[in-house]
Amino acid sequence: MTRDALLDLGREAVRRHAWREAFTRLSAADAQAQLEPADLEALASAAHLIGKDAESAQHLSRAHHSYLEQGEVERAARCAFWLAFGLLERGEAAQGSGWLARARRLLDDGRRDCVECGYLQLPIALQQVAAGDIAGAHATFTRAAEYGDRFADPDLTTLARHGQGRTLTRLGETARGVTLLDEVMVAVTSGEVSPIIVGTVYCSVISACHDIFDLRRAQEWTDALSRWCAAQPDLVPYRGTCLVRRAELLQLHGAWRDAVDEARQARERLSQPPEQPSVGAAHYQLAELHRLRGEFAEAEAAYRAASRWRKPQPGLALLRLAQGQIEAAHAGVRGALDETAGDAARARVLTAFVEIALAAGDATGAEAAARELAEIAGRLDARYLVALSDQASGAVLLAQDRPREAVPALRRAWAVWRDLEAPYEAARVRVLVAQACRSQGDRDTADLELDAARATFEQLGAAPDLARLESLTRVEAPVAATPLSAREVQVLRLVASGKTNRAIAGALGISEKTVARHVSNIFTKLGVSSRAAATAYAYQHDLVAARST
Image (cartoon, rainbow, N blue to C red; front, side):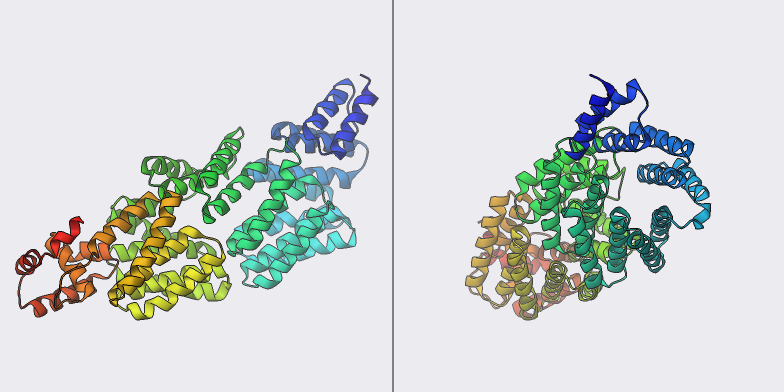
């Protein structure tokens, strides 16, 4: 086939987004005679999109030098920018910084009036984000957007406005930020920007939705990204990240088996050389699913694999809790909270902290964490986060033996989980509601709540939750007439089993101080003065027998 024919076929493949074919045809044409710089750029893009990053960088470098030879300094500077962008994204900071420095020199440090000067604002903004100067980054993204508008460059405008939107959400201006991100996605979905920009922005906007707990948008854009990837089966860079996000949403909606499949596919794709940092998210998501299904050995291995790229908390601490290693769980989640900054990140750790602190008898810590979580929920105003906050607050109130106050918060949380189609979270709230109802003597409502929760756990395969539910049911089985309240009977049974106050607090999800008060009341009501005498009473009145039913 002649070079001209190969070149025509390669260009046509680029227009059709047939990236592997484009790479093959353009490479063959280039082998016969060096391509023009614009075609070298297209070849570099095709190489990147099929996962050949080293070859992509090589062709971009050639395009850069070819533009210089032709005296097209600004186009050469743009190639240098994209080279730097890819290198920095892959963690090759020294080479990336070198190419950025060359681009700046070619553009006389911004004294040229060209769109490429706007592109060079982007790495400055990203460095400001990394340094924590979010307001400064927003201002820099705004300058970049002005260049994009003035020179009518949709790629630059889209990247810059996307940066504005993300920094606004980080600054707490969520409504303004989301509006900008929605505008950006119009350009992306309508095909106004290049494919490399499309994939980058898709993934970043989905991450932004997760950061602000906007699950509706996260679902919408994840589905759109999945369709975009499916239409281009040769794509490599974005498909793995897409699968991680899909796995997270499938987990939320109770499709755990499908979520495991998606997470495994993501792990495999992101592990292919060169291994991408986001493989850590795939390992972590797989670990979470194993933990929820009671596959503890597999969860342990996946958390360890994730730790190469990211912190494995709070999932690892929750695994320790499920394994009964309460002190290790408490230490792990406490350390994670100390090291975590930012509302969104802290909210995720705080949720786990409340559960673990209550199990460890740290009622004060749990109450403080629930209070902070409520403050964050108020600032971010996301329904998902409000439900987490109400659930945590209800659990703390229940631990403080204030079941009447706990129920409204728990009912609000359940309503949100139901509306978000989150069956696992809804079932866990129903268990807490059942405990609150039983503490108030409403056994019929409690039994209905527990039956509903049990059905959900069985359907999902949530083995640890089922085991805890069965344990809770045994502890709360009906008893004969006694002067003790339902909660006091629960405590007496555990006293009779030889548990310490701390262990009882962990089993019932209440504070150690509350347990001590119940024990004192039990002694008073029964007219006894020791745990041995109380235990004897429990056996004499057939209270302990209920534990084996």
